[in-house]
Image (cartoon, rainbow, N blue to C red; front, side):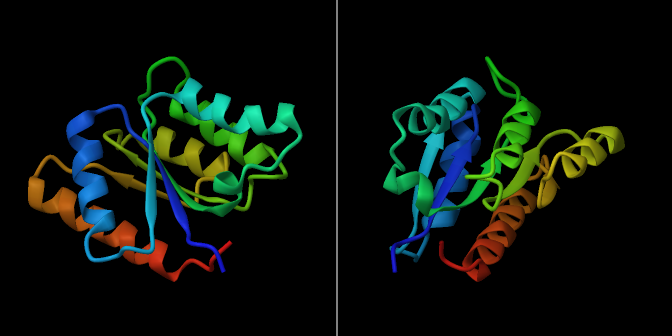
Length: 143
């Protein structure tokens, strides 16, 4: 069975570093792939579609942690792309965003998000949220 991977889409370098540190802490079986904008994610998935070759890394992604406020292509459009594509829709997508707007949260769920977590301002609360994500990830079946 292949190792599970997490695709982290986060353009804030401090948040990204903190999330990666917490996710990888004490767990050498997981790999976090960091992307910093929506276009990078779309290109990553579409390259496989165009090549007609299933990239091993993509087929092993069990979880996408997705920020909504991204440069180039926003996170909501990335979410739609993943969930509308039959090859990728089974990948769990958790939104981790500073937005707490009810309309945004409802739209994310409507577009197929498996969860929505609002980033907290407090360092301790943010760490707890990422640890919760890690626990969720650890119970996902391996792909």
